[in-house]
Image 1 (spheres, rainbow, N blue to C red):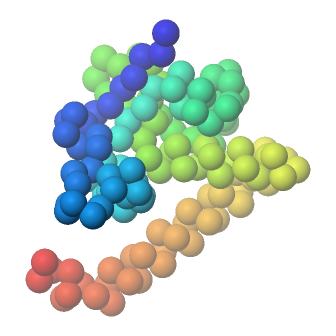
Image 2 (cartoon, rainbow, N blue to C red; image 1 turned 30 degrees about the vertical axis):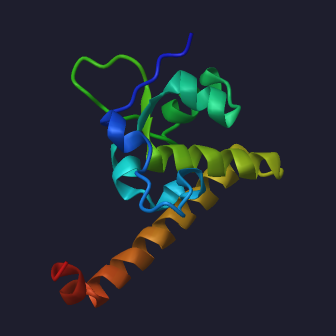
Length: 132
């Protein structure tokens, strides 16, 4: 039995239908920022969804390649959206033949580049963003 850990309110799990012509199932969940911000999943479910053994995820964590969400009194490893994204990217690169070390470095560089790019965009449009 898989225990599900969501740090989200039930109404956030499924985006609301905005009009009668909009199919809720066609919504790109990556555009649902509130959902992604609150998403926290236990190691068992991440392992099941990603097709990666829990032991392998624990090993990656021990090596410092991925991080768990810390919480008071929490003993189960839990992952947020960004860590799940890293897990999926590392797995994809491993499946393509990269070594674990090479895959982890490539993913870390990719995440740094994405973060840096969005920081630049945010700084460029700071005044526009502040007016929202």
